[in-house]
Image 1 (cartoon, rainbow, N blue to C red):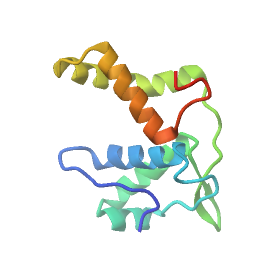
Image 2: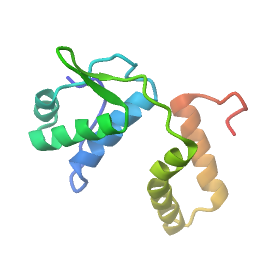
Image 3: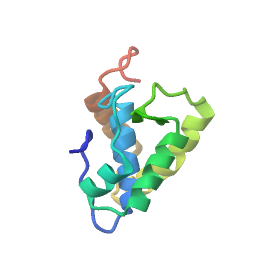
Amino acid sequence: MLPFPITLHPGESPYRQVVYAATKAIVSGELAAGSAFPSVRELSQALKINPNTAQKVIAELVRDGLLEVRPGIGTVVTSGRRASAGERRALLSGEVEQLLVEARRLGLERKDVLNAVDARWTELFGRDRDGGR
């Protein structure tokens, strides 16, 4: 059993889907610092993915500073280094562009997208100290 929810969708990269689901679980606090993360074998068996894909997932999460491998203990969620504002913006730029193109294709206006993002943010993380803005 995996410590984070994921349903793999056909036609999409399993690698990208697992990285996203694990990242979401870590940044939302669903997986706390120090929590055990599945091994390559556990991940590949639970999701029925190639062990090489599972290894790539873990390697990316380690590179991103979300996981660390502790000899004799296993892979655990880190408290993580804080990325710079520029690094955080760079990580989001591709996803934001996809969101905006899809919103435009659906005929949505800017306010619709902003309202949807705000509502989802609140649903996932609660309100910010400044009221969500």
